[in-house]
Image (cartoon, rainbow, N blue to C red; front, side, top):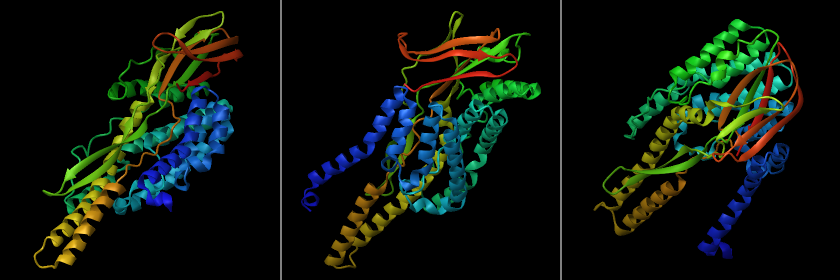
Length: 438
């Protein structure tokens, strides 16, 4: 009770409790950046109840699904990512009917339904899970699922946005000028690259060529996302000399973006305004400047950037951001109108002083509630990588040892991924995967 009577002490206690709740994530992040992925997965499980509320199940599935993948626990990772995918599908199906009427509810109290880029890229890592377990057929199924999701993106929020725009007009709420902005992402070079490799491994060369061309088209049609050059190794993926084996390298680096709150205030009268709090994606800077493959007693070469996952995350977030903006403005406008009505009633000459005071207090209280209750939903998965680099080289079949080196802008080594005595086979996919999240 003494704490409650002292606002400063109460505030400090809240900060301490908040710090206790977030400290395990900081610990996990540090262990993860050091490359101890098995320990990171164990920490996520140990602190699961602190880190994830009941409505954050999707976040748990994604975070742990990715970390277990990095740890080489491919079967566990598949189970988690598949649970996450099913939960995202169920959450979206529910939102199609519920979203229109949920503008009165702040997103922070709802079940987290996943970001579009999370739903897309979970299939990449599940495809890699299947590859590492020797199941190319299911790996190809995952890539096809990813491609289908990308094709569905443009139409995904159409009905929801249309209905929310109609409601915004009814409430005289402001509609964002880019509410009908076109989505500039229709194909993933990373999905096409993996499809090319998997089809080549299965001997389906026509399908492999289709994905090879699709990868090039993705670069040509989406310059806002693919601002970097097309990797030079792509042209060689189907031109393997007779008697040679092909080694492919896929290296992930950095971390995907997180969310921050952006606060805006919109005037609705000469004396009243509404506060809106919106989530915006912000970059998590990476120290990685170059990634190279070194073959022991052989050549070394620099890997090339294939997919900027952060850029895809930003682009695919635009459609959902429009929905969030519309809902937030409608909700805030309705709260602001209530305050204006109470203020107008309190200043009326037709009521007595006591009633005027009560209405003024109610109006003031409503403003405080509106200000405090508007919070952006900042939930997002933490452990998708930020970028994907690739390379390929033709070798004589045989046993090799490799090192993938991640370096910063000064050439200093950030991390090294070592593979000893790996057999490189002719007429088989030899895919080396590495990760550094610094």
